[in-house]
Image (cartoon, rainbow, N blue to C red; front, side):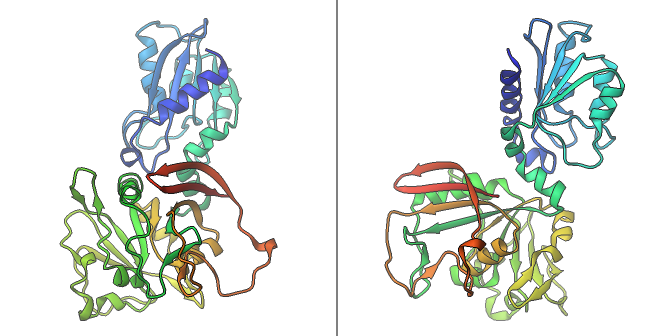
Length: 366
């Protein structure tokens, strides 16, 4: 196995993890090669608070040889060098005198300084900066480098970019298979769903996770509601207020409520301006709540605001094979201002997928 093959092996191992079990930790895979470049140990991070990938790989390798001094360790992410929920993996690598460590991507956590530690112990280190390893942990990198949640926008539109007709009717633009994909792959793999109070009212939304098998799971919901409109008695029967046992409704408001909220509901006071919520004002609180990865399902105003504030990280765009052909229909995006091409937002395509007759385009914001 050559170096590139070993790194790809690590990345594929890392992908075996269920992100819901490891978040906020990153995906990590590890493989140990002997002198003949044969795999003698492998592992991946499986559970928050559980052993790291390096531990599994080293334990497995030790079952084949007690001497790892002539072996190389390949990692999808730089090993930790500080005490967290587990001891530093860098210390374990040094303890077993592994000859060389090849790292696919550096850890953005400022607490991590393993390369210096390994080099000081006489271990050869090579950093590859492999793009696929960085892409794999895009949520983790956002959390660490930008100190905010990783935001995913979900849009479903006609070919001409309409999300609803002139009367705001949007049921249904995308097909049933696309809607199920949203539940199985998007809603089920985030910490919360973000929307606006207008969308909750307009769509009569519950924002639950409806499994392919027919089961229904609760989901945390973050609702931007500057003036706490949803607390009015006329809205108390909305589907979003179903009985909750394992989730919360977080209302983002301009000022704290004067009434006692139910146990499953909480308010976060944010800063608002003429364009709406200033997202930087709530970032720390959302991370504190454990909302590291958030899916946005809302209208054009909120979507456009997030892009304008440069906090949208990914876009899942479901395009239905239809054209509304009406200027009065609701567009999926658009600020009420003149913008030249010099202000265009650049994206990179990650994946395309055909879902029945809908086209799914998955992008990363650059």
